[in-house]
Length: 61
Image (tube, rainbow, N blue to C red; front, side):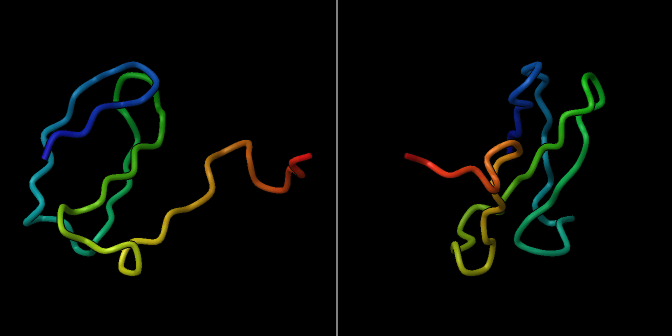
């Protein structure tokens, strides 16, 4: 699986067979951004999404 950092666009090849669960999280080696990857075929119930940084607790008008 290909994972691309949203901040600096560094590309990572992820071996899904080595993932212990439906999701994996790691820091980009270039910029330190946290990258979250979800196994292909994993349902939303298996891999719940966390709020994006900076959006938690804001009230929308």
